[in-house]
Length: 233
Image 1 (spheres, rainbow, N blue to C red):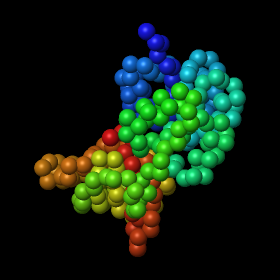
Image 2 (spheres, rainbow, N blue to C red; image 1 turned 90 degrees about the vertical axis):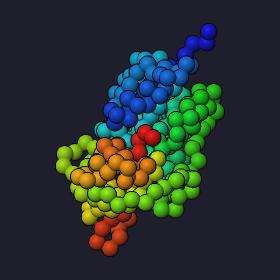
Image 3 (tube, rainbow, N blue to C red; image 1 turned 180 degrees about the vertical axis):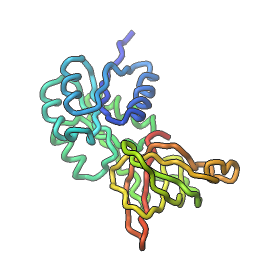
């Protein structure tokens, strides 16, 4: 029986890392053998734990994944697959030039993510195709209009800000708020008041207590329109 391929996950978001680990370990031929939540920890773990592939986020505390990539690729035999929300041609090119063997967007489905892992493990470079570019979406996605009060908060900070949900889909949502939101930030999105118990009145894809990454934030009169992609869907 062929042995399982060994993976290391480098991701600072505990919820996303746990979901990723569960997905990978559910595959008969893959297993997560170590985890890290910072660049420094990633370098230490990758050198101490033999692995076939490192899944590397680019946004890490204490330094970006770009700073880790050159040393990581030069000091371990494992392949490196970047897993990030950053979708620009510049970030893809920079990661590949820094030593990554592949580049995958976090908003891909589970099948595509496993395919990306298998492709890089096979020695073939993998790069995700351009994904969603709100408000000019290129990926087919059923969206539903809605108008619910929500609250959002930066995932690693206390406090929340009121907003209005404009529409939603299986993969993400758009909401309007009076406060600007940083692109690339991780948010916790929660339904408030009557919306939380909307029941049958709620659109099929309306979700609460969900972790999401901000894809874009655009000024709109005295408010800001925000597009967010859920971590897991």
